[in-house]
Image (cartoon, rainbow, N blue to C red; front, side, top):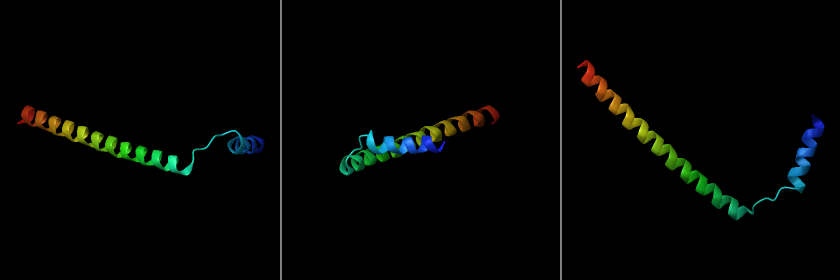
Length: 62
């Protein structure tokens, strides 16, 4: 197990091409914005379905 961890760190240091800081921070902002948009869309759809189901059961029961 220890050998695996050492080889993994060596591979990360020597074989992985890392982005520069500017490009990485720009991509991080893009991911954050899309995550917020997706969360708001999910919240909106959930609220809409909740209200529709509430109306359906109000009509069915009442």
